Image (cartoon, rainbow, N blue to C red; front, side, top):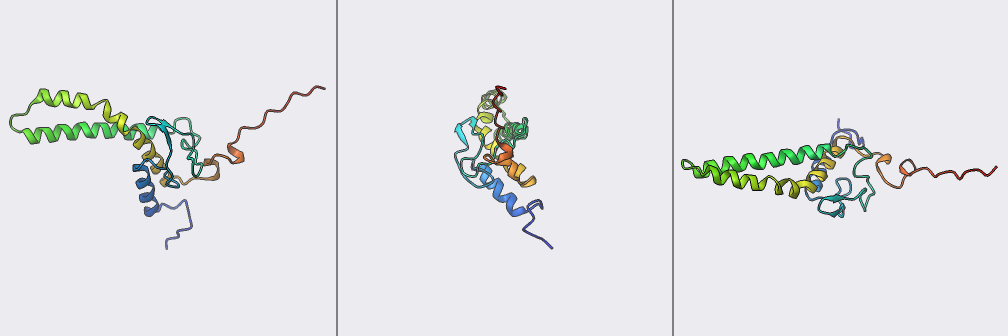
Length: 151
């Protein structure tokens, strides 16, 4: 029997929703936009639901680097295969080499924000957020510094 009230249980519908939001560079939790100040600079938290986007982990986005790297390699491999199949038997190896070398830099840069939001979507699907993952709650605030006593 499937219970939908348990947020820890894996839910395929929630997973699809998160991935669809991540592909569109939106917050996987609420669907809100405005996660990026510039193309490569992500906000600390979602402006709509206040989800802390790095989930308070120092190396959180290593998963997005892997997604970005695999995507870049996939584009290069598919580009090579497509070019070879399209031009067979007279394959222009130099043209393929230079075209793919020119794609090596812009593809990861252009896909970078998508990789970050996709990684957030995957993580939220596997590890649903808790109150500690949202900005503005007591456990996420820096403790006030006590004034030195003058006694």
